[in-house]
Image (cartoon, rainbow, N blue to C red):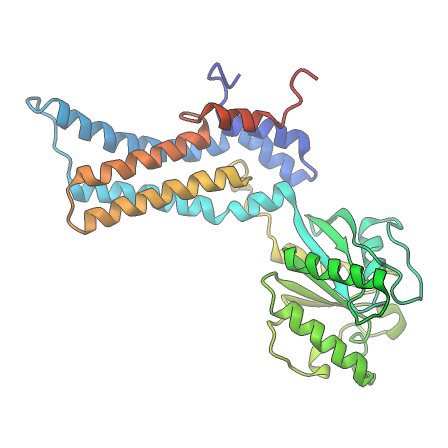
Length: 353
């Protein structure tokens, strides 16, 4: 269908996205993209740029014809309009990638804080071993779950502490790597659900170091006070343990993985951090890095062209940038995509197997 012009490249990609969709929202977006949702957003941008290029070449190639000359101000306005449309498209691409791939989420905390219990509660079955012995989890455990309508790629990690156990040390090191690579961090602690309870100095010092480590990272984080069923507290306060130099959590929730109390608060916090977007956006979201890269290159080319015009250069100086933008958009839709790029896209299909 693609080779015969029945589908563009974004629609062809939507077929495999629909097959691979793990949430209803991802399936809706893929189905809308298959119906041409993204193409309808891109076509006006391409037509605007094609009009600029074609008029310029018409004036150059047929100087004796009565063809309206290219006006630099008009070109600048058209390029600005195309650039704005690409900016809006790129602003929503994070939502598209969350829909398609989910959010890599690290569950971190001190040993025996309730991390594995939280993963089991979110997964709906006993995915991890849970015991009263600190340090039960020695390696990272991964599971995909829906939380607040958002697909989370959960990574349960070993408790972060100083230890002489060689195997546990390896687990702690993997925990830190998972935290560095995460797009969301759930910091689980069982001392904050009842903040009036004194925290042992050594535990407090270790937890403060962990707070600093999480709070200085790039990923948003949610502070989860666990074991609410044991304390009877609905919410606590991180102010009870001091105020180190760290970014505040995106949300604070108190819950019990055993009874389910407070789980809806966690779902709401996750949904607020990663909104699905308006239903009108369905099908017009960039859902992978290939699409995002092509759109970014097109926008960069338009910005260079506008800068050239603002510096007083003649329209032909901006024409190269307009054509570069068209080439980048052509890669996105498949109009000018190289054979190896198309092969890479279709390699995701099990054709002939």
